[in-house]
Every structure is written in C-alpha cells, then in structure tokens.
Amino acid sequence: MSGLIVHEWISKAGGSEKVLDAFTEIYPDADIRCLWSDVNDRYADRNVHETWMARTPLRKSKAVALPFMPVTWAIPPKKDFEWVLTSSHLFAHHARVMNGSLPARKFSYVHTPARYLWSSDLDERGANPAIRAVAPLFRVIDKAASKSTFEFAANSEFIRKRIQTTWGCDAKVIYPPVDVARIQSVADWSDFVTGDERRVLDSLPTNFILGASRFVPYKRLDLVIEAGLASSLPVVIAGSGPGLRMLRERADESGIPVIFVERPSDEMLFALYQRAMVFVFPAIEDFGIMPVEAMACGTPVVVNAVGGASESVNAPIAGVAIEEFTGRAIADAVYNSAGIERDVVSENARRFSLQRFKTEIAEWISRGNSI
Image (cartoon, rainbow, N blue to C red; front, side):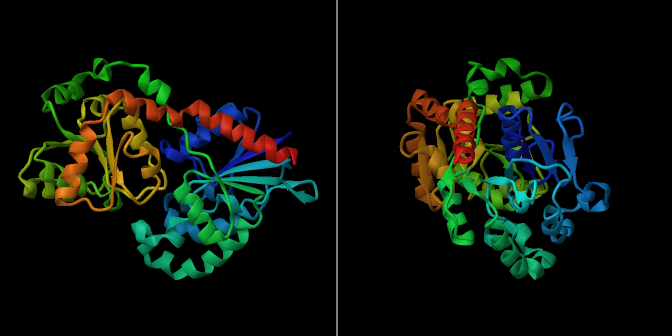
C-alpha cells in the first residue's frame, strides 16, 4: 500500500526528528512531506516533498509562518496515497491527502496538541502577541481538523489526556523511541571523550547532580541549581541556548560549585549521565527523552510529577517524581534516588527502546489499515 509520512518541518536534531527517522525505517518506501527541510541530504534516497513555504522567508520564523500553516496543509500533494502517517506537534495532523476521490486513511502520532495554542502556560512562545491574537481562531480550526484523523497515537498518557481535553478524541499511547541499545552498548563512554571535553570530564567532582537540556526558561534548569543548593552537592549543567547568562548569574548567587558544559557531544553527554549521582529534570515535558537516556546509563532521576517524564521513571523503580523543587523535598528526592540500584534503573529504560517503538507503530498502522 502506498504511504506518505508527514512531518511539520525537518530540523537537524530533536525528539520529533528521532520519531521521523524511525518512521522512515519502518516504511522505507513511503514518501515524506514537510513544510520545509533544513537538512537537504538527510533523506537523499527518498521522495521528500516540501511545500511552497520552503521557497520563502517564512521558513526562517515559525511564529510568522504559523498563520499560513493550516491552509498550506489543506492543499493535498499532487500524488495520491492510500494512507498517511503524521508526526505532529503543531498542525501536521491537518494534512489533507487524497486516495483518488476519497481522503487517504490518516494516522496521527501526536507529540502534543500545539502548545502555542492550547498550553501557552507551559511554552513561553505562546506569549508572543501575534500568536495570542490568532490563538482563539486557530483553536477552532485545529479542533475541526482533528476530525480528519482515522486514529491517534499519543507519546504519553499525559498527552493522551490533553488530546481528549483539546480535541475530544481518544488516542493509543505509544512512547517515543530512545536509542537505549546504543547507549547501553558502551560500558564507559568516557573512553570515547577526547580533547577539551576530556579535560573537562576529568576535572569534575566525584559526586554531582546533572541537569541537561536547552537553556530556555521552561526547562527550569535554575531548579537543578536549587537541587544542588538544597543537597549541598556540586552541579553540572549541559546544553546550550539563550538562557546561559541568567543561569550563570543564578549559579554565582547560589554559592555552590556549578560547572557548565556547553554543546556536549553525544559521547560527552552519555559520559556525564554515567558519572552523575542523580539526573534532575524539572521541566513539565510531553514525554522527556533525556531522563530515559540518563536511566539507560543507570543513573536515577528526579523529575516533575506533572508531565510525561513521571511515566518513564516509574517511581520509585528508577527515581522520584516530585511537585515542588524546593528545600527538604528536593534534597530528600536526590538522596532517595541516589540509593536506587543502577542495574534496576538501566533495566527500566529498556521499556522505551527503538525496536519496541517500531514494532508498536507497525502493529498500530497494520491493524488500522485492515479494518
């Protein structure tokens, strides 16, 4: 059966791109459709169809491009397909695809209903005046477009409930893929860390709390520093982003050792996971891949009780989920997590393997197409 994979836009890296990669491996003959691609050679052996937006300056500003997206997805590709699988965190599930005179059967894998529109309290981009002005209208359009999907899958129970609340639709939970096998194939990732990263790694204290993500406000890396302060432990923060200056200022105020590792390689990040006493992840995430990566390394995690990350931790099996990252609560969470057997933690992470994801997606699509 001829199939089409639809993705919002193709970036160099990201959790949704890992899902897209898995989709292309499951369906090697399927075409790909996206608004635009920033990685021209990523799928060189595939038919990748970009929309008209790829040839305009709109691709450089998602906020400015947003009002044009629903009408763009409403334009069907010239080629017909029997089924379509969307990877959606904004409007990709709106995609109109035809099978002759009828719509193609559509399956939508949802990372989240558009946070810009439906959960602006969890995403600072929703505060953009232009987005706030159009949000009421686009919520109506978004809910109406959801009815064109034959079946939904959500990347967590947290998102399944959000789909019910926003669109009034049910969804099957299929957790996203994490390359657990690759992470666990190396006993000591520090053996593969070289150059300046090696010198940084060798200089780190024996016991430390690790935080890692993009340096943006909603990731709440400032609370990782609070965790170190409450626990009297050094902190290592890895990542990059515009919030670095503010995080450095908070680190200076804290009075505890805080080491920043900017733009770590995969090898460095995995080595940091392995060496950390605990990985602290305060963000309210739709799922949260980084806590699973940390668990794959055997490192227990402390996560926010709200959001998808609490589902992967399976507390108290592989860590602790808490509602407040302050004082005694976070100190207790750090020390209670640190006492968990690392073999148990790494075993818990295997529930989110890439192969498991591929199997569940293939079975979901196959069953739906046989109805």
